[in-house]
Length: 467
Image (cartoon, rainbow, N blue to C red; front, side, top):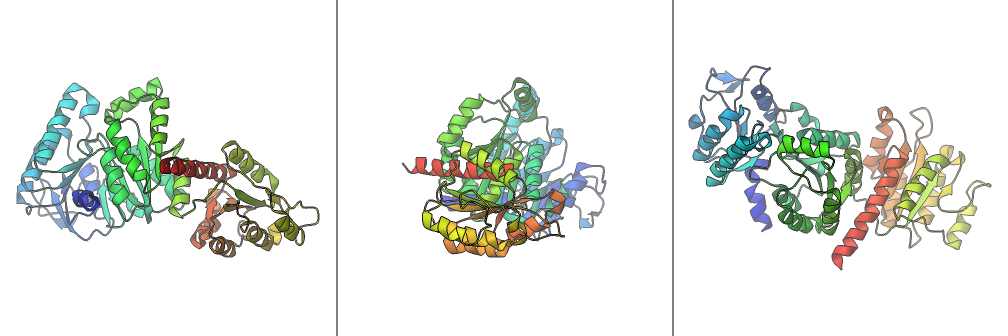
């Protein structure tokens, strides 16, 4: 079954050829940006610009005046045309053996009864030839591993490749999530702006991404579901294999009304969604930033085997904030074993208390080897499953946290290590370097605490699914 779903969506994510319908040299038209996006990633397959009013070339490539002029069996059609031209051009593509399509235009089921009828006809045409459609009313598809940018946004080519995939009902919220992931230095495998979900649903995408070898973490932004039972069944199967993170909005009167006019989706009650997602083993978050921070931990293999944390700091305030968030969310800071506490007393500052959390005062800011010695001791304790170091960056003019040695201690004990590196985003180079060493790093205590709480929830969900 896994190979079947991968092959079903191969023309979408790994097309051998792409046709851009409505491609143009006019930078004030969507077709210009669609073709520019397709060619922005170094895509190695054939690219066919199609426009009945074109000259011999479009953006330096041979132009085609009609779909009928294209070779038979083009994998992916990108539609940068008005909604009135969508149905006839999709019909032509199906007749030419097209396998997948991305439709940017709105004016379908989100626009009322006539739009709903048009979308039903669109689905009928696509299904008659086995063509899978993303959209309508979307910004498209990105696959960083295959160099596919089937959107109208060339800057998406800037996103680093990684193992996190995002499926968003909203193109705008999809961009928000991608931006947060980039800010957290998390690489992208695939991005799908799923829009009105003509004949490709969230359920199809979670099933596909569960099988996708390039995806380790699945992120979903959902405004509403039409076939909730099918989604939950397939999402439950996916969550048994990979973390599935959900960000869900559209519950108030005004936001629900906006969702309906946006992608034609009708939301249910917040309590219903929360309960259903939890039963399916999905992790629900409250913001795009929470999603990005949690996805980073999963993508870097930072899942503790229990809820016991050791935390060391040279500054008490951020550690207090982390402790509050963690303990309210079921995360523990186990007391240190007597032998470990005795060993700590042999080298920590004289007025420090050998406890967990461990405040090493300003001594550890300059002598940061204190973190390493304390963490190495604490991670040997059976009910401590990960470590957190809190450190205020020297911003290039002070001490630098010893990330490489810290990460090595974590690897030696087989337990993830986290760093709350207190720094503004503009000074994030040190954070990025820590992550390259294998340290899971965040720049605020709130992010750090929330991630640990969500990881603990994930562990509980895994246990519940296993029973």
